[in-house]
Amino acid sequence: MPEGHTIHRLAADLDDVLGGGRPVRADSPQGRFADGAALVDGRPLTATEAHGKHLFLGWSLAPSGGAEATSWVHIHLGLYGKVAFGDGPPPPPVGQLRLRLWNDTGHAELRGPTTCTLITDAEKRAVEDRLGPDPLRPDADPEAAWRRVHASRTSIAALLMDQKVVAGVGNVYRAEVLFRHGIDPYRAGRDLTRAEWDAIWSDLVTLMREGVRLNRIDTVRPEHTPEAMGRPPRVDDHGGEVYVYRRATMPCLVCGTEIRTAQLAARNLFWCPTCQHTTA
Image 1 (cartoon, rainbow, N blue to C red):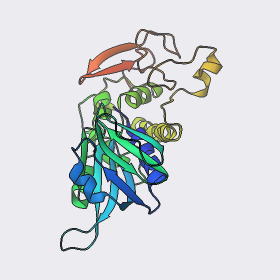
Image 2 (cartoon, rainbow, N blue to C red):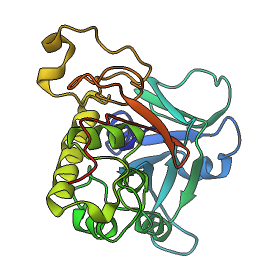
Image 3 (cartoon, one colour):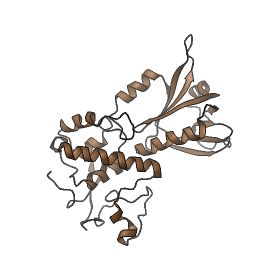
Image 4 (cartoon, rainbow, N blue to C red):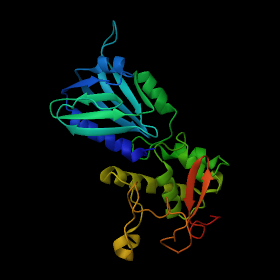
């Protein structure tokens, strides 16, 4: 599933391609979003926003008998959703296209999302109210996340994946930020110090901003890059240089200990038992 940096990058790319106040054509070749596409077809895209793993595309629509208000196409990619971009109007549709958006200079095609629905301002706020603070948003409140973490007996690894605690963090950022701060993933949230939490949050902000800029996840420090260590670059579908994610049984880049993996809340957890201490 795409992590939060991917959704923020999508919001920016959609604004670049289709924003600027120009009318945008919309349809749903698959038919599952035909009514929503018909309502926004020919109208300007007025806003693109991301909150965690949720993407919101804003359109000014006039409800029956009322003044214009913003309606939002709410998209959650889930495990299989993808957005592809191209120049100019789109070619004839191929396969299961949930939503196509285009103008004279560019187009975007959405396939396989978990969610693609037209919602009101109030419904958008309700979605966001269920989410924790997003490290990539300027309105994020890390104090709100800390209150949940500090009060919980749940492991910090599970808490970081809970979108009600922190929005946008997925399996890669979870594993990597805990390694970078030497924290055992099984430690209870309430056992973390405030200094440890502040360091985790600050690091997430920095790493995820770089993820938006580069459109990939890189978490290794300069002294552990392939060039610095004289090692081959990582080869993985996810790309990016990482310390522990999907490196089970391989030697830790820092201490040489074999990286471990285990199931936690139906997701694979990765960590170094030497670098990630069991106590604060």
